[in-house]
Length: 408
Ligand SMILES: Cc1cc2nc3c(=O)[nH]c(=O)nc-3n(C[C@H](O)[C@H](O)[C@H](O)COP(=O)(O)OP(=O)(O)OC[C@H]3O[C@@H](n4cnc5c(N)ncnc54)[C@H](O)[C@@H]3O)c2cc1C
Image (cartoon, rainbow, N blue to C red; front, side, top):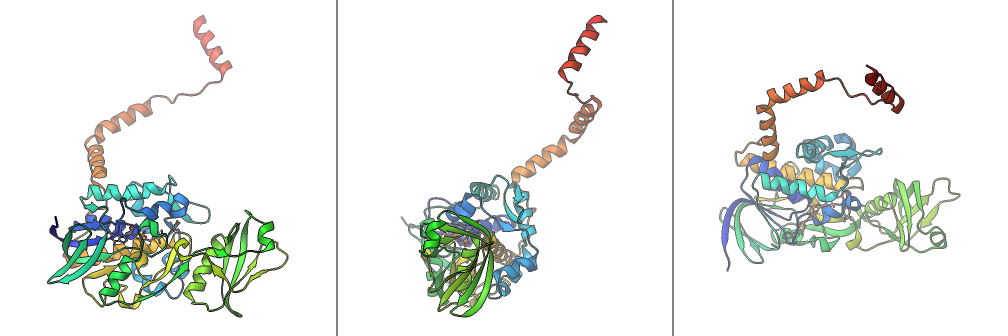
């Protein structure tokens, strides 16, 4: 049986961007429905950072933006300025997900479990009563009077506005299969061709065979299009059975894709190595293995200050469905979260809504309880402080005191 319901906003895709968007919609009290094609939310989030989830990098807004590169950073400026790495950490802490910083400035959940990030979002949706429908792949979007009709496989729903957060096209098993880009094309957008970003280099060589499973820190990777030097990355190079991986290599393949290099080549300088290793006619591992998709809904057709389509008003985009990508180190999640929040802020403000306090209802209950029992807990505190702290005595000291008491 087909049913049609009406809501202010439908978010399509419960990945990093969709979950953050739905959580933020809850903070505004915006009537929202979140639809997800898979049987669970955040399948790709669960894989992030090898299951540890690198949420962001502890950088200033300017440093964060310059790390994205000159092609992407102008588009991301309003979103990241409004939700910086500091705001991001603060938001997770407020929502009961403590975070920790590694020596190189990467931010992870303190538990180092990506599943805690997903739980943080789903708890937030529960607390703010935002419904999420799983196993609900959206198949088609239709423009109707005053909004849109969204057709999922088994039901339809009408909404005043839509936010498309269906991700890129890598790791298709996580549910990101390019549906959002297909919807965008049908709504009149252009989609830039897909290329693999943050992916390994397929390569075989004697040097690789003799260094199999080795990890080289502090390497320099020089990136070329033929003889033309493009850029340089630094960091880890890992020798794998199929070729080369590690942060410096992954970042290099993203830069090559972004520059549409016709004759991609790299030169690797291993720290303390004798001479550079040059790889011409570079081939990468397939796009389905890339950590990020380069390509997607073109940035020029989306207003960076609102995330609204300039082609189809009322349709918004956030996250990897757009032609945005960043280096490794939490940049792609930062972009997904920040663009999602900007879209919601625009939609909610247009609807005349104000953001409620960003604390969960259970946190509110705890705060109320603490306030109510403040007197008693203060009393308990003062009684505790009056009692002398228990001093740990050495065995001989304990024995001495015991016998002196007995003598008395
Ligand atoms: C192995 C791996 C590790 C990574 N590690 C990190 C990391 O540590 N830090 C970092 O910053 N980035 C990392 N990334 C990149 C990061 O995961 C992505 O950039 C980010 O998840 C993109 O978020 P998104 O919400 O745009 O898309 P996704 O997270 O891909 O979410 C899209 C969602 O939309 C759903 N969907 C798709 N089509 C439909 C439809 N028709 N109807 C309903 N739902 C639909 C999908 O099922 C999916 O749940 C990693 C990526 C990979 C693959």
